[in-house]
Length: 189
Image (tube, rainbow, N blue to C red; front, side, top):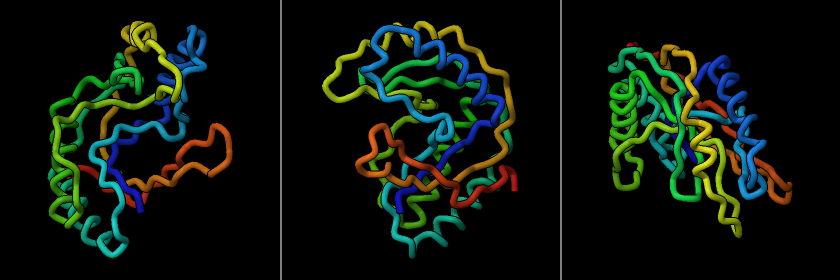
């Protein structure tokens, strides 16, 4: 199964971001982007990739420990950015150091559970809202300029989620991956 660790923003934060993203749809060049579905918006902490189901109990045990060691912290969706021309994202503000620490703990928990993780790289808190379509060369800077003024209301991150990524339905135009929570732990035990 394909797994990742995430922070799931509350519905109110997603609604606020949704209004900002709706404004982005009025900009030129939107046909060159594949927009992610609001029901899948999340902040990825660590991508585990394909994990053998037999490892799941150990992964869950390690993630439970990681969550227990992390106190809840404030966060808000804030601004945005892009990774080249391939991804447009909303950023975060508030407890960024705490978020980075939770990402490091999730990565370490997966490694200790025996998951073959990619090379560790510096964490960048982001929530992907669109990806560049193959064959298009969409300039994402105008979208980032609109997102620059976005400031969501703060909320308290109180959970660590282990998520399963189900691939999009084959042959269905515009189909998105579907995400489901495998397990959620409260922060701070």
